Length: 181
Image (cartoon, rainbow, N blue to C red; front, top):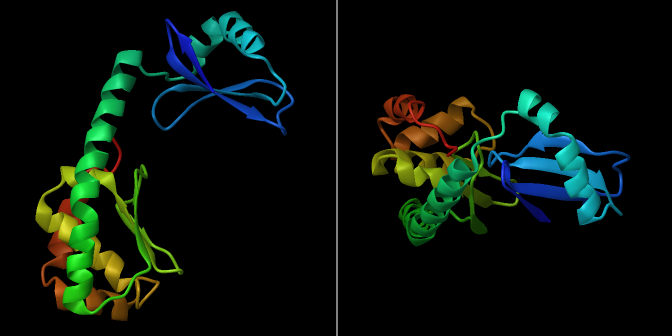
């Protein structure tokens, strides 16, 4: 549930059957988030928010609501670009090098560029659309190599190196970018 507030913008209200009281935190999007007991009404949530404004201002790094809207727009734009590009690029390299994966998932993880699960799902961060194409390709090749080696063993890096001779340089350059928004 989303609560609109003049000062904090959109406040995420999560109803939890395990909650015994109200807790405030900041979500990954920078929004204020409230965890409340399952049967808390919207009226009570607003009342609790209003009675705790001073404490929230002092203790939580809530972002400006205008910044939230900008991030939302940027995320929507990156997702659109990523959907049009990343699955096709993944498929291209998979066919080129003979890899088989079960599905491609797009994510917006704050700390990782991609991952490969044991059920052969490859997840790619939409933030890859902010980096040069050569680095996107490196991440895709890195995740494809995980289909054969679910670790970062010597054999894994050897396989990455077979497809990307400059993978060490690409890995270093990728560290200059941040996967989050």
